Length: 338
Image (tube, rainbow, N blue to C red; front, side, top):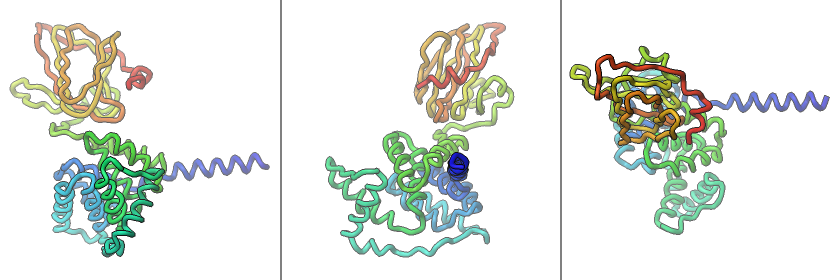
């Protein structure tokens, strides 16, 4: 009987954990935050409409874009609010206004804002945090960000961290802050599974693809030679210009050989890998250029947690040049890459 009860408790806990997935509302907030952080106003406009369709309220978006000025700067915050205002010129009947905005009482008590902000920052960090190196920033973080801004009631603390993690996921050069806020998101009420699901979802849906180069169309003609989805965008097809190839996270092509020609790769966004048979892999980051010798067996693709784009073209092309596609790059080989 005792074993049966234990089994039922474990089953119930597993079911509960599995059920704690992101809602469409949370995904909507996250998508808008990620695009806002990148300044991608064109994609943000359509994503705001979709988010409002999926239950995000107008006032929640206002709160999210306002909060994120502390992470992305006032220009991107104001631009995002401008896009929201534009969308609302054609407001749909089913879009919800949300709770009426009210000025937090905390705004009139600087001492209490500092006290409450310190407590929230401690909860988020998991321990007291004092930035003695720069007392100005220490005060801004405690009193303003975690005090004044977190005093708003449009978003829960858990939602605020969903928004923050999503925004940081869309930015370059903020890896330490992203890692800290992923931990903080759990401390503020989300599960580790939800946070990992959030980051994986932002990657899979392309929100974290940070690039001025076009994504292009799904690479259907060569899909059989790729593990994962890739996309092609010819840059100057009429004049034989380079092709921009976009790889989703974890996507890579099979081992292959170029006969009678040299292939050139120029990484333009994201992170990825290039590897020749029998050699150590080379990390691809924006600006990395690889000239692949004729007849060398190799593969290239995206990192496990990032999109990657590279331009590619062929040179030193001989008569009868061809590509020879070989075996896939196994998970065993790929997952060893650090």
